[in-house]
Image (cartoon, rainbow, N blue to C red; front, side):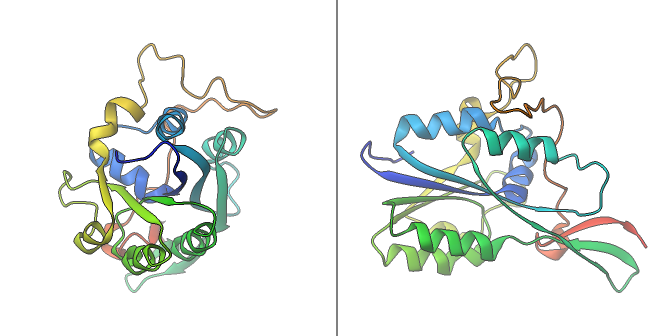
Length: 216
């Protein structure tokens, strides 16, 4: 990674995109290790995590993760999903957080010198260009080693730096066997123990905006 120690850096994590990217490479992200890695490399100002939540569920498998992140250094940005029925009668859930992420990046550009976006979504190319015009460096974290690649070529070309997330696997992956780091040491009254939870699986046919919940 290309960071200067004096750089003020903000992380912007598209939760569903990062989850799908790591899973496509066969590992899970340890968010404590991720935060520690960037804190060592630069002056970390803020780490945003974006995810949509399905309402009216008695239990959400992602809720323990959200609670842990909220108590351990991440700024959580969530919104309710929207449900609809597609042409084949399947229930779908729309949960796109692109606008929220873009607005926060533009606002934080006034306070940081380097933005790190954890997403491969080509829709962010114009956002990256706009931030660069403000004199802010932009790094994109995703992968070209999955099939198909998770990062859009136009986004990779626009960024000042591209970080292949598989190169960070040893530093940010969750170590399942005999690992007591995990999320068992979280701070706060609702300390969470995370096992095999994560973002909902992405329906790739609908360009990462929709989550399938089953048939109507």
